[in-house]
Length: 343
Image (cartoon, rainbow, N blue to C red):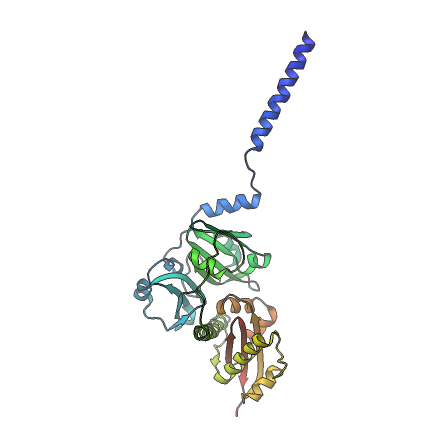
């Protein structure tokens, strides 16, 4: 009888153990990365009264606060850039669509990008927010998941501050500080697609652009590249560069040729090296340098890319250069620098 009782007791213990085990296993276990992401995005970050706070506000508020923009440039992503470039210490661009600010870009020592600061050490930046290897977004029934590479996480991560505000942090990997900042609403983030994206539903895209619109967009990006380059030089204690039209034409021709001929190189199969191309165009120079790029999101993105590439950075920050010319064709970018020679 005792033996039978013991057998029954063992059976009950085993059965209860199995039931408890199965019950616990029904609760989904998130990987640590997903758990951390959920914790971070549940906590909204206050943005204060800096330029980031203008995302979602009316363009009238921008005019009231900052006055008329120095320039208005079209973009590839439906909105217009209102560019405030008069003060290189507080350079900013507001992307305006249908009277509403949908994106902001800012760079310069004195621009207010609360809760961040341009020049802030990365340790402080990442104490405020913790970038993750993916960023999610929802628009109606459509869901999007952006996948960030290790390089993206280190130098250009995006974080969600609240349900309709995302911030991309451009980090200077050589100084370990925040170089510039870009903020988007959710629709603009999806249109621009700064990273690889996996989605469910429909993929929101910018409206197609005409050939005439394309050239206006390219010209605007050329001007922005010059402006942002000069801000970065100023931050690094260097003199800003003067625009040189004939040098810009050489740069544009090279970008166009690379696109049309299907190559990517500093040496043109038809026009030769940078020195050859400048000489043929009648440009007088003592020394010259060139940065090229392809496939970036826009002019802002490409300058920050050059800044984080050692060779391109040296060219961009060479104190001997005095003039600059930039050419953009489709998504090919050429930036030519010269030190002027007396005629």
